[in-house]
Length: 404
Figure (cartoon, rainbow, N blue to C red):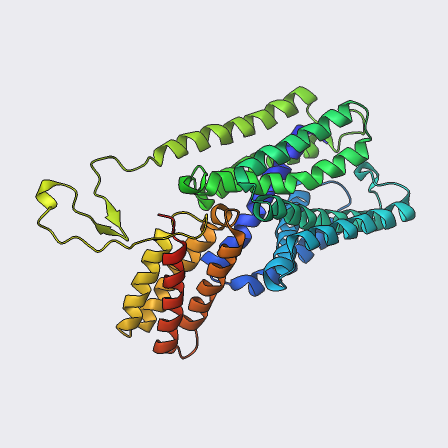
């Protein structure tokens, strides 16, 4: 395994997760259609991979990204759809992975990826990879959400565990064992790193946004995979023990360049998202508040008296959108409300990684109430009274939970 391998692996986990969310929420395919689509695409990619007689970087990494998506979706289905606790799902996938490894070793007497030279061994390999992504997702969510560690601590913790794994390898621990431990840990590390870059500064992130982060990661992945493919075409697959194609120093240099590029671009873009200056108008729920002598004669909106009962923090964005939806429904503009509901869905989904670890129970309550609003507005024949009732329930909860 090379340095570029691990960099691509970490970045691909973030790409996989954000792309699935983009299809489900932003494009509007929904989780069921997105799940079915990704499983179908993965099946096609794996057929191509199994029919390929030698290591082909672009095919291999396409399969890894798709497995990342499907593995994440499997865990999300257990947690969000079936309501399985993260403790149970983490334990379940750990048992499944142990079973895969046990069966693999009994059949082939090896778990080394350098020995994958038959279709059956490759089948065991991709089964293990899919399970590691599901386990890594569950374990990562358990640490950052159920244990309320957050994505900043998650990045440090999982990065530190991978470092300890590397130290153990250098100290003489088995190469196969340390490889699979690190492979599992890269999934929660990539997710935590992605959340750190994408989340709003209010939630402790760098506020780059999912689209910017995904494009940045994709560009680095594309460059590194393209280099791997060019070297493989020129020189073939590296012989075991001879080091990476192109030399070890060159491999480290390319990997380090990718990391430095992400850090530099991320820091630069984060600085562009500066906080409002003291001369900017103060707003509450999107409306200006009189703060100067020239403004004192202007009408001042009524300020909501907030009594937060959670650690969720500032929910004003969602309260503002909900208030807009209430006004539309009150005016019987159900078509406009249905269209505007997309803003509520996207903004809520984007903020999940920042809000959920703060108070998972309250987040789930709001998530259920937002789902009820979306369902009411998107019904074939929406009821004005039903939509209004669901929106009032949501707004009352937001007023109660808002920690402005």
